[in-house]
Length: 202
Image 1 (cartoon, rainbow, N blue to C red):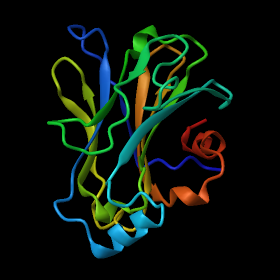
Image 2 (image 1 turned 180 degrees about the vertical axis):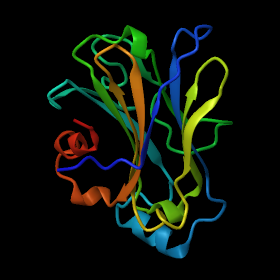
Image 3 (image 1 turned 60 degrees about the vertical axis):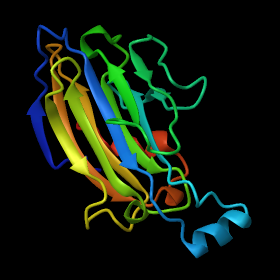
Image 4 (image 1 turned 30 degrees about the vertical axis):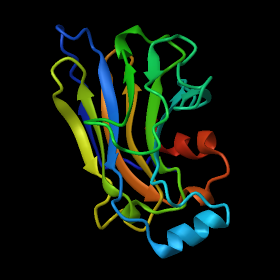
């Protein structure tokens, strides 16, 4: 299967920052809760809270899943301790990034050759129901954005998950940034580790 890639560019790592990156996910709380949301919430569905989740999946050179990092306790740092998640946010009330993953590609072990970033709606909604959903990959020190996406755009409004971008290590040790911007319904996916491997270029 051909990888799902919109475009590719070299990942430029600044010396001042020593290569540290941040992938940030942000949104705002909706001011009003609809009658249908209140009814669904009473029936046990989480609809009054508009919750987005950020995660990343790490693969080796054979596209085998080696690790994954989420906002959940026990899953918010990788084995090498070079990729960390800020923790789960369920309300979107923070200034700037509500959830973020920081990493240093130059310090990652050899078994991590590819990293795929994923955003999901954690509540019973689509992106169109969430206020100002936005994701970005940036240089941590300068805050220079390398790639970004308004997840609530017309392309993604009817979906509940977005494969945002993939980082891939070249043989010379440098990295490439692949922009994916691929939307789907997360309920259709049984195994994210298997599914996301198709976003890795050979």
